[in-house]
Image (cartoon, rainbow, N blue to C red; front, side, top):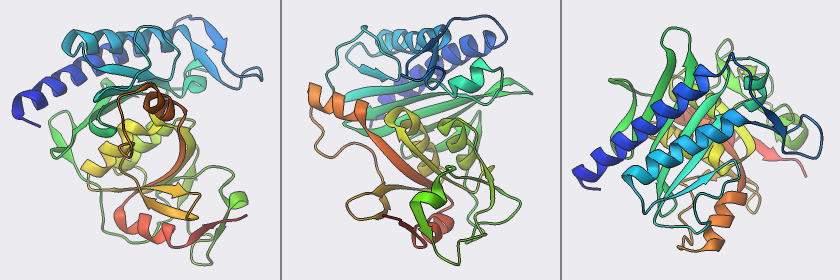
Length: 289
């Protein structure tokens, strides 16, 4: 990418991140409509704030890049469902149930993809000090919080007790763990927001995370943030029954409805973190058929 395009992408990403997150955080303590997307009452919530947050990102996108397309978690009619070279993948509030219950563990996630590969992204979380913290990355330029470049700590090879880790509650029911790994998974926390977990991984507040099964909008921004911070990202492959390196959705990418639908319906289980720990975990875990 040339410098002028990088600058334009970065400016649009910052504008969208700031506008959406300010709206979401401003309304956190207020009243808003809550709807149920799932069959079971309360299982998959969406709010009027989610929908407006996504619309804010869309308006920033078309202002700067009218030829780009948006794929968001929330259903919308403001652009065609046809993949283009440039696609924005958005989770307007990841952790909606936390948000509804006034628990400030949620995130606003935006990723800009070129032919299925994330090239620019941001995740914003609420912050006590500054009301919000925005982490962003540009492919090949590192991961940043404000003017500070961040790097994942690779000083230890095994998960350490007393340091946060992210694991799904069902991990031990679905996977067989080696004797080396049992009892050595770190200080496990389930936060209710995949994007929030990936933010913590990139920021050295969580040594690794096994996240999912979740959607493209839960991972698109975070995988770039972690990779650009020097971390590792792997996806569980059902075909190979192991974790393999994950780059994005570039394989077989075409500018058509099928590609858009494929990314929209994609679900995966992602292992991310310190490269040494990710390698150690991936070598000591196997799916339990």
